[in-house]
Image 1 (tube, one colour):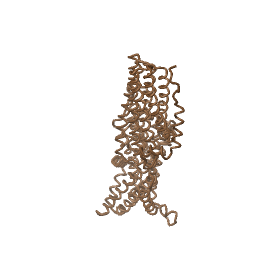
Image 2 (image 1 turned 90 degrees about the horizontal axis):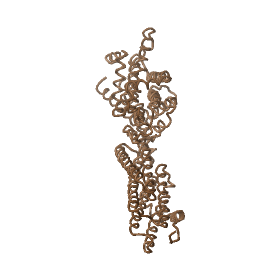
Image 3 (image 1 turned 135 degrees about the horizontal axis):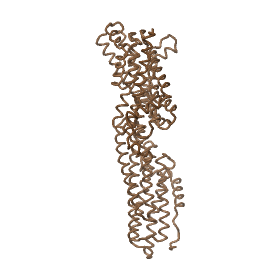
Image 4 (image 1 turned 90 degrees about the vertical axis):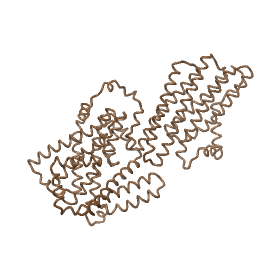
Length: 596
């Protein structure tokens, strides 16, 4: 093997690793966070957790990504440690799918069907179609599928390049002697462990072993310990990700390590003890890419079948390693701060991280609404405990706004799809609007306090008008919360007519107050209070309008907020006016002007 063959081999390795990364990224984007949501929602049954762990890992082509996600789930409280055990067991099976795909390089035969199965036949086609989709595709999903195709083609190209470059090594005595050294079970296992830990992918290290197998110099006695070591080395990524996690997060990473240590050590003790007595004939035979895939899968499947019935032992083992602290014993999971869901580990899967942000923001939205409604209730009956509650809730909303905003800024630096980038922007603006709504809750509370301290009261007529106005504010806020949490576009389109009516009510309530003031039925001081309340109500409705328009903007190509506001009157004036009339009827102020 000369220097040029060596460079070709290194180049093939680079293409192989890059192709695997591109393929994995494309699969994650195409899943749009759905795989992670499945893990999050459907892991209460341990057998289902194993199957989901295997399925998700097979789809995203990375057991490391799955286990890192599990560490994040456990760390943030989304998933219990018991559920994590099943997913981690399944992930070890799912990761073996890659080896089967790579074994296609050994397909031989002259029939048309077998020729099609060869990577050299279909990879160029996938590459061409993939490039066309990436370059000309109008939808993100088309581009993601193109990325998957190109990634797969580059992966296979790298595999073929490596295999071709190492073929001359079959006649090199030094190379054969070098590989024979790894037939020592302990040494071979350590090589597989270190290689996998360095490149952080057991699929990649097994793929490299499969590429070397074309030389015929890799025997099963060499391949088996390297495969075993690769399983332990795959734990490096989850262990690194657990740094800085809470105790449960670190336990989840240790489950992955302990499972692979137990299955590897047990297999080596049993297998090599039997081999010493029986002397398996196949051990000296050259390993094939298909044979390596079979061993890799069989080892993991059998291990999962054997340990599944006693998987609780893994949980007990990690709890012995990291004992339950007094704080954990006292901790009430119901009172856990949902901000813990904003785990940095989820940033590696931007689509899912964005969904987590939406979930946390939904809680913030409910708190903001609660603060506003408590403040509104205080206009009828002020009490200091409610005032303290409003201040407390507003502080919580501020904290949520800061934490979610900071997390979204970090997420914005990741490789986002165009759709995700737009959603991030909408989410960032929406949480700002809801935070401002909680600020207006403070202002309304202060108006209620002023009325209480100065013993000020609205006339019965003013109370009735304000009650109707308040009902409109409650409705637009409730509608906006539903629009945000459920992304209901039909409801979002109703916000603008409601906001129009609220503006009308504000003018009308003030006008009627001025009439009563001239008749001596109300005071100037109450006029100032009423002005403060109506101003805050108007601002709240403006923020609700912003939230709805942001959602409509997200779902409309080349959308411009101001253009929409004009178009809703000009192009759809009949519909808009009908909606406004309907709202005015619902929130109609009393027609009589005398006090009751």
